[in-house]
Image 1 (cartoon, rainbow, N blue to C red):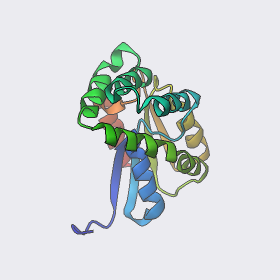
Image 2 (cartoon, one colour):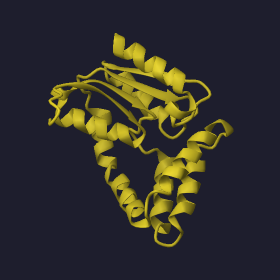
Image 3 (cartoon, rainbow, N blue to C red):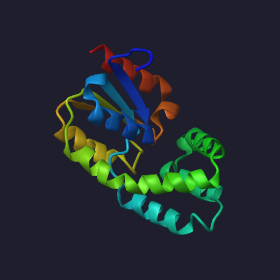
Image 4 (tube, rainbow, N blue to C red):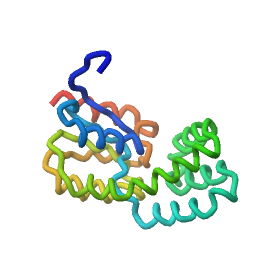
Length: 180
């Protein structure tokens, strides 16, 4: 508002995709197009088990142990190494209290994600996902089938953090989408 931007394109990665989708729900007139990299639209059984494990151990185990464990669960392959390192490096900037708040927030998102999957939005959306993102790719495929203005670009030999693992392909796909 203070810089008087009326409408814009939005790009989000991982949890950031949830923020963008929420903005689009609240003020769709401000969102021209959305690009969602490594989008989180559903917590599958693996991710729910991971959240359950984290919830019961978050006050017992050092939070950095949990972050490292999560990094290897979400990004297990050798080619995900740079993404894991980035994830852990950024996690070191959080304090344990912030980590616990993040955990609480994540569990509160489940009902919101269900709405995002069911309710189509009239904003062109590109999902850019890694073919090795076994935690979140399946739910995105289902949404793209059901939401007419959604498209899916799957990057080969790539995991969850698509913009880190395949930055050129991510940027190329994003720019092609924005030009159309």
